[in-house]
Length: 426
View 1 (tube, one colour):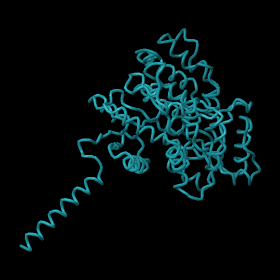
View 2 (view 1 turned 90 degrees about the horizontal axis):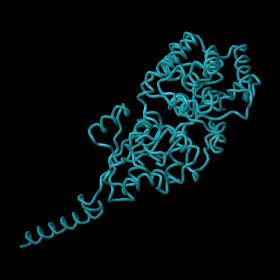
View 3 (view 1 turned 120 degrees about the horizontal axis):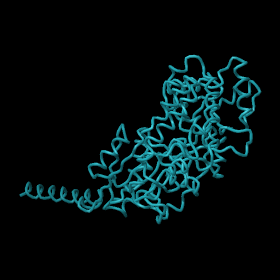
View 4 (view 1 turned 90 degrees about the vertical axis):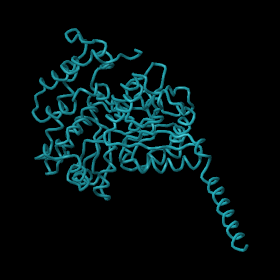
């Protein structure tokens, strides 16, 4: 009898424990909504894993499955072909995002309260890449980068060089360093994309107003187009080539990682890159001396802007069956606390009105341009991804053939432009 009572007591205890555990674990599995979350940044997987834990703890009825893959551009297209659009996505706010937005893959978020929090200048940059309809907002910026010139303040101080405010001042600074045996810039031409930061900054300030809108409007009529790379990118190409004449010996064989290490170790005065390189430079040398300033492309400082792109865009699948839960997750990711923390950890600029100003000393040289809205978007986000811009530009800075460079850009543009959807089509 004693053993029977003891068995019943243990069974009851086990049953009670099971009930308690079930209660602690949240609602029954059938009541839990699972969100598929496509997250494109490999370096931010752990950051988002922690955020998901926080979100799920506060929302026990929602589970979020993070999906991060090595080739996100290919992966997202594969999912779309299989009609498996994720409920929530992060994507880089580039031309690929714009093409998907134009194809109406993403939900309209224009009426969501979180959309009102985004800085208008930043939202404009993202919208310019493409959207389903002109009245819609198909992505909300979560983090921005800033392209500028990184410099070593100790080297500048040693040679009495002030932060350049004009193009002539920039070239004079480069000449001073060169004359003193210091590499003015550390170039990493083995990685073709590293020619882009200089190109996009030169183009942003030197190309005619509305250049790409007018180029698109020309369709395939190259002969009668009012603008073209050959006509309007002469100064851009000249100044780009001038910058790369200061490349250190052997630059063609140096990759991005080696460049970060070299700059971190003080082997050049300046580095043509952006905020996105700061974490990697610090990883190479935590004691690295880093400061920044915008590209002074002309001799009028009032013209100077910072080229910024939406590094992390939040979007929602247009046909998600879990819109309310997906929006709740997006609102959480755009909350002030999360935005501030992410910007600090990833050396990014926060794109919302309530966010704290960027406090990283390395980025202060560009911070005021960001908060005052003196921003331009990346010109390469206006080109179809099928145009190999970085490879074409890499070839140009290596061979210096300006006529061929600009003619190649025109050929590529007019060959592909006819297949590009126009804004407002759908």
